[in-house]
Image (tube, rainbow, N blue to C red):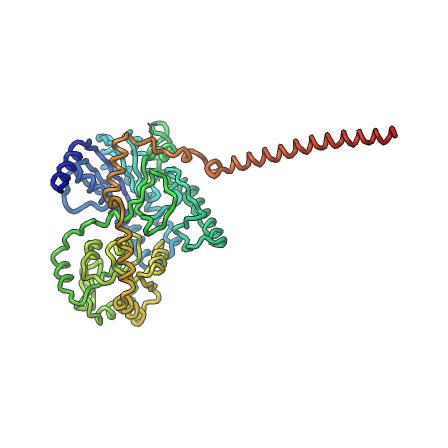
Length: 515
Ligand SMILES: *[C@@H]1O[C@H](CO)[C@@H](O)[C@H](O)[C@H]1NC(C)=O
Ligand SMILES: *[C@@H]1O[C@H](CO)[C@@H](O)[C@H](O)[C@H]1NC(C)=O
C-alpha cells in the first residue's frame, strides 16, 4: 500500500472518529510538568478534538481546536514561586523547601479553582473528558464529577506510590526500587532499605498528602453535591506516566497505567529560530548546551561559580548556548549565546551539539538520551542526584556537583565528555533502544485517551484489587485468617488427641488396676 492510500485511510478514520471536548487542568508552577501534557493536548487538537487547557504557561501561538486558559500567579504566590526556583538552583535541601512546595501545590490549586475564570468554566461549559496533571493534585478529580465525565491522570515524573495507588497498581518493593533510593541490586540489605523508603513514602503520600489533598477537595467539591474524594480517585479511567522501561527499568504495570516516556520529545524536531540555527550551523567545532531546565534558574547560580563557568567556556573552541533568564550577562564570552527560553529538545537534536550541561531533571535526561547527547550533570536537588548517578552508571554522563565546580574540575569534565568517544557511543545505543517501540510516545498517549473516550471511561480496565484497603491488598487479612484456621485446627487436634490419650491412659490404668 502506498503512503497516499495509507494517508487517506488515516484521514477517514480521523473523520469518522467522534470529536470530543477535553478539559486539561495542570495548575503546576513548574513548566517542565506542564510541557509534556501540552504536547499530548496539541496532538489531540491535531486530530480534531476540542481542547481547553488550564495552566500558568499558555502557548504564545494560536493553535486550531485549542484554547488556553491562563492562570495568573499573583501576590503571595508570585513571591513563593520565585523563592521555589531560587531554592532549587541554590541546591537548598528538599525538606527546607517543603513548606513552599506545600503552599504552592495545595494553596495555589485551591486558589485556582476559586478563580473567576474557572468558576465560569464550571458554570457554563460541558466536557466529555477531564485530564488532570498530577502533582499531588488528586483533588482536581472533582472536575470529572462536576462535568459527569471520565477522567485521565497524567504524571510527568516517576512512579510514586500514590500515583500507582490511583488505579491500584502494586508497588512491588521486592523488585522495583523507589525513585528516592539509588540501589539497583535486589540483595537483602537493599531490599530492607527499599522497603523502609517505600514505607516513608507511603506514610507521607498516603497519610499526610492524602489528608491535605482531601481537604482541598472537600472544600471545593462538598459532599452534599459531589461524590467523595476516595470514590473519585477510584473512578479514574487511565493513568499516563511520562517514564519508559528503557530508562526507569521494568516493573509490573496494570493495563490502565501506561508508560509514555519521552512524550515531549518530538518524533521530528521543529525548525530552530533563525539566530539559534545560524549559531549552531556555523559551530565548526561543535556546540554545548547549558541549561538548568525550566524551574531552576541559571541567574541564581552563586556568583563565584558563575565566574568560573564563564571563564572555562571562554577557553573552549566549541560554542555554548546558555539558558540565562536575564537580558545581560556581565563578562559573556564571545562564543556564548544566551537566551531566556530555549527549545531544548530541538537544540539537542542539532547534529553539532556535542554535550549537554544539565541539572539532570527527568525531562532533560530523556531528551538528551533520545537525541544521543552525553551529559555533564550538575544535580541541584529532588530526584536529580539519583538521575545523575543513574546515567553516570549507564556510562554516558559525568557528575559534577555545584560545590565541587572549579576551573580545573569543569575543564576536566568537559574534556572527558568531548574527547572520549565512549560517552557518545553508549548514549547513541540507548537512543536506539528508547525509540524502538510499537508506537511512539505521542501516538501511544493519544491511542489510550481515545480508547477511554470510545469506551465511555473503559470501566472494564478497572482492577478489582484497587478497591481493597491496605490489609486486603497485601493479603494480610487472608494470611491472618489462614494462621487462625491452622491454629484453631491445631488446638482442636490437640484437644482430640488429649481426649483420646486421656481415655487410653484411663483405660490402661483401669487395666492395671484390674490386674
Ligand atoms: C480555599 O480557598 C478559599 C478561598 O479562596 C478559602 O476560603 C479556603 O479556606 C481554602 N481551602 C483550603 C482547604 O485551602
Ligand atoms: C465511574 O463512575 C461511574 C458512575 O458510577 C461509572 O458508571 C463508571 O463506570 C466509573 N468508571 C470507572 C472507570 O470506574
